[in-house]
Length: 79
Length: 177
Image (tube, rainbow over all chains, first blue to last red; front, side, top):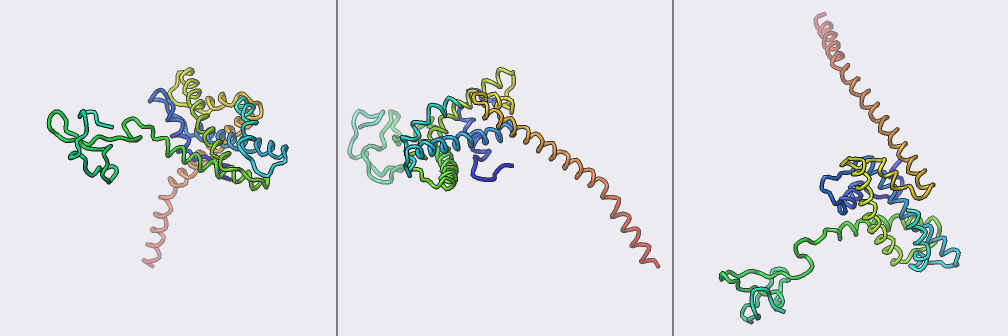
């Protein structure tokens, strides 16, 4: 189910979220952590794949920041 | 150049700085008003620094792995700057996610963020919401299967003590023959 390919580790996700909580008492349940890891993985993979598609549409062999910039607005709207 | 305690730096006060390990006028020790000497620390590692550099590096590593997979799948390459940009992006997006999740939980009068909050976070795109909902149901099913397994294992262990007693009794019978 999880850990099939690269992904975010639960502890990392936990620490990343803890960094920005306003209240010290806020905690995250284990299941929510696993779901957040999935969400972050999808975020990264979407950003990567959309940039690749943009590069392929422009007939390039290297995905550069310009391609990422073009797909960024829609990506942020979708998340 | 100068420290908070002295008007000017006297050459004889310059010594080997413990942080930099070399003679450095910018990190002298100075004499405080009470006559004690103290090191004046400079640099980015002052009090209240965020330990986020290690986290950023960890995110960068994970993002790099994921991008490598995508790249080899599509037979294309990512520039280093692109991977760095995606990793920075992910780190910043986490801040938005964290704040939203905290508010969702607080709105429901909870202090622990649960899967419902995460599902609410994924509401903007229909396919994303569908995927996250499916994953959450898979997780719930996985958890209930684990619980069933544990329960079964506990029941089996409760029955075990009976068997060794029977075996010992059988052995006793054989030896007495």
